[in-house]
Length: 155
Image (cartoon, rainbow, N blue to C red; front, side):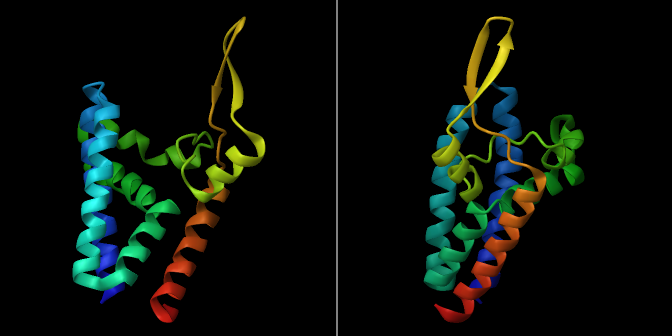
């Protein structure tokens, strides 16, 4: 039961993220959305605890942390096309994902390599999170799924 609760929470979170991020992005209020997103994730975690126990809460957050919710987000881009973002569904495969810095791969890059200097004009540079390649995102998600199964069976 805990795995089902976790997956339902993951798909609900990704749906909230899809519509919420897209809506707030067009309002230029992404920072406000990030606060709402954190509150929503915490609420879903509590609901996972209530309906599926500690395993469900751990599995939900483990899958989220290893980018599974983001894969679902991009699936929703393909399905819904809210605000014309269907073209975004291939973003993870284009090889310029910088926004996954909070995942295990992103945090490892940040810890060992720091931020990357990116040229924004002839004499001006800005530090950005490093690009995470599509293969690393996929491997990370597979590891998250395997760890989730281990949590389900052995915790």
